[in-house]
Length: 171
Image 1 (cartoon, one colour):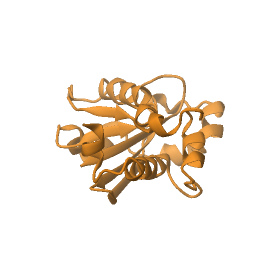
Image 2: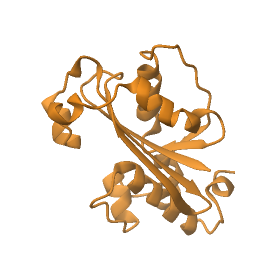
Image 3: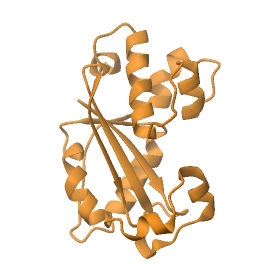
């Protein structure tokens, strides 16, 4: 299965995760969705980031710290799932920097791919932003978390490639 990952950050620090969304794709179906707010270290929230994701200090004040959230999502990073994200290097950096802050040191080893490259064969004259790719595939992102929208993008690109699974298309 594929675990589509999307972090939001509270400020310019890579360890300031303030939310995480994970959507599981099995075959060409979404089978599970997880979303958690995360209380960022020091509760430092940049207004610029709030303008992007809409999360405020008030909402994050009662959110669990990453240690707690990690116990709920760590199974996605044990090698059983292939992880995907739009601009994956960003989300993988956030994960590694945030993991550096957990109480017990954690090392993860997982395969991942970036949906910018995954959709590139179908988007030769299209920009790389998630919004541009969703529009190109005629996917409405209204009322969808970015992880869900990215999962829909992967499913549509896989169907357009005329293969039966994401794993087959990756091969």
